Image 1: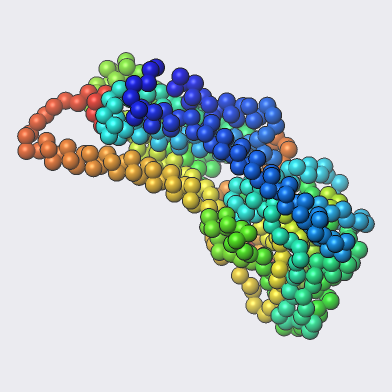
Image 2: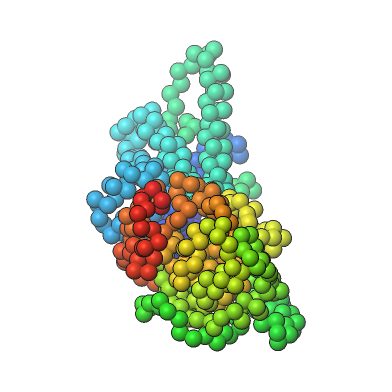
Length: 204
Length: 319
């Protein structure tokens, strides 16, 4: 059910494409739609832990991996439109872009950082890495989300409201974690408790 | 999956956002369509034969010079893919938000260093010279391009009427601005009214078109009705829309994008494949309707006409 909903944005683009309704510049439309949905799925993924705690719904955790993988799915589509329809698989041109244009550099960073997270998203990899290390690695999503927002902010010409809205949302979701971390440290420090957190229960 | 408690609905609400948004968009469009139909009818009823200027009026033209024989973009593309930030920053928003923009009556004030400053009504402008159809390439700084059959005549026709004095070295242009009619302008991140400028010799160049129509009709609102400039050798944002003021001046006037990000948008902003925008290469462009990118031409292919204007200038410095 959730899985199908996550495919919704792609279905909308596909449906509009069939009806020739992707504006006069379909490639730009697809690039922007897939980029937008990457940011939205990153935000949803980051929202799971705060929502679980605030709403006392621990079972929400089962959606986190799927939402994260959908963020990766949409960023792959986003990157594909860029490398194919903008650069026509000219890797030399792509590297020039990545090195020279800071909005591409930071967008590329956001994309690359998600690759190991997608690969290690399975239960087997959690076991192999161990909960602590797996969790450390998967904190890369914080950097990826921030880099994604900066990528958007540096891309627009002057209308910064939407990138700033994403920035505020990501900022809020990360600030909640900082608050949580501070209050947990306050609680744990006097008790000197060394409780091992499994990644499933720890804040991410 | 079963829904147990109402808070879970809050989360479930997040995912089907596309459905939700599309529904709202649909309703909004339906509402707008109604308003537009109503307003359009009202205008038609009110317009006396002499008030000929509102979008969609047929214009009689002769063939003008400088036309390209390249394939013209569709009317639908050119009217639904617009940068007109006063009416919203997305490409498809001006087509919706500019529908009820009042372009009649309209006057253009020509002033500054001229012997005969005066105001022109649209009817007067339309009668200044035979209307020419000129098919120009139009290259946006964002790396897309279109081919449009514009209608108008050289800006120099109007300039010669007001007789610039020897002190006039630049021309300053200003777009109409009214927050009530352009509420989206608030979110554009630009200072309005939109202003642009040209050196006098650039403005007097015969390619510089004072444009009143396209595709055989008066300009649609989202394309800069009722009168705009078209400068085919410069990036699109120099071709200022919905003109209300033209001022001949001594010093280089401010230009909106140049003022907003001087390192990205120069005063001249001539199309130049060799000078990159700081954030992207300008070597290629996508002609709307085409899959592959094509090579961008120096001065957008109008070098034979305009290159002499910039003899001896470092175009990297004066980008």
